[in-house]
Image (cartoon, rainbow, N blue to C red):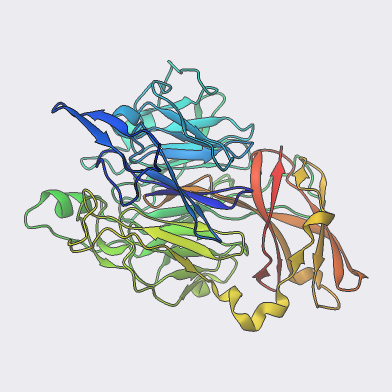
Amino acid sequence: MHLILLPKINKVLMFDSTIWLKSNIMLPKGEPCRMVDEGQGVIHDCYAHSILLDIETKELVPLRLNFDTWCSSGALAIDGTLVSTGGFRNGSDTARYLSLGDNSPWREYPGTLANGRWYSTQVTLGDGRFIVFGGRDSPTYEFLPVEGQRNTQPILFPFLVETKDRDENNLYPFVYLSTDGNLFVFANNRSILLDPNTQKTVMEFPVLPGGSRCYPASASSVLLPIVIQPNQEKDKKIQAEVLVCGGAKNDAFFWADRNRPKVFNPANDDCGRIKITESKPEWKIEKMPSPRILGDAIILPTGDVLLLNGAKAGSAGWDDAREPNFTPVMYRTRAAENERFRELEPSKIARMYHSTSALLPDGKVMVAGSNTNNGYLFDAVFPTELRVEKFSPQYLDPTRSKERVQIVADAMTTQLKYGEKVMIQVRSPQFQLDKTKLQVTMYSPPFTTHGISMNQRLVQLGIVDVNSNVFLGIHNIVATGPPSGNIAPPGYYMLFVNFNGVPSVAVWVQIR
């Protein structure tokens, strides 16, 4: 399962794979079936392998795919178009595009990539360009060309050769654009800082102990909130920090997938946290309340991190995990080290391999997927999961509704420019909004699959001034916007105003 929230239209795009030649949704009448030749004659595939889901009305729109998207990567372009890369077989070197229009079809370009990209990671640079890293048997990276053109020059990346072990454990590497324009690249248990312009390694970080963290060991990871100070100077350093949680020992896949009988070893129960902009960074290790592999990490509008989904034992792979981790955990990023984890209300649905999640504009989290089976199977140990849920964090408790401000969307510009102030007007029953209890945050919706959320980013703007009750119940906020694309790459963001830890419904803004 791959999932991303598309901006402005507030629809979630989901897609799986074409290789099974079926799903539970047919293509619309009149839509031509996909013609597939598997060597035993032509097969008519009339199933939808991608859909758009309206997050409010639940309306489904089936979309036709031709080239396989299994274990692919993706990101949003500046105009909100989804740009997806790689996949399996005929989709491995494909770039595909989906625009925001209600009836927009996929535009697919096989042969775009110089190397096949299966289990690769796509990252957005500060100028809006994309780089695609890795993939099975592809220890390279490459810049994605403009739509319709082809790239013929992959760049050898020895780091991916060095981090591959017997069971790989370096697929779907965690890649983040740091605030200085360099790229933090994490694979297996190692990480470096790469200059994308010179293609040189700027720094190598200490090894994260405790096992492997990338597919199939499949930890989850986030770039922690980037904080802009009021009246931030353009050239002043802004800190960047990375969190990696869970994973498994480096032989977990061998024991769960290749050994007979299968052995499901315990997943990791730790997190590593590191400040990647420091001159001598070190990992700080913290213990989670429970082990977790195959989970998701979602940054909430408040800057806290929601850890959910996954299993407590085993590995990624078909039927290779056991003990679903039903209990979400809140990681409070600014709390004292021994007070950061808080367990929340458990789910009743196992969300394991191929589960996904997405932050929504109302502050809820959509949770979907889970398929540990090679196909749509409903009589397995963990049946293919087709249900979709919405999880409400504790800030949506009805007793706190009076703390929830409302952004007056018509009173603000949604087109932002780098280095400029952001003017926001909110409606609130509070007589006065305490500046110390306010946050303004911008969230970039990620492309989520296999426990990795590509290009997920939350930027906290510096609040310069608050003018309370300029009209009855109306308050004006002035904030310092992102100084450059290295802080907030160009494109669409959900802008939230949080009061006393309770977020507003977001307004879509675009920065460029």
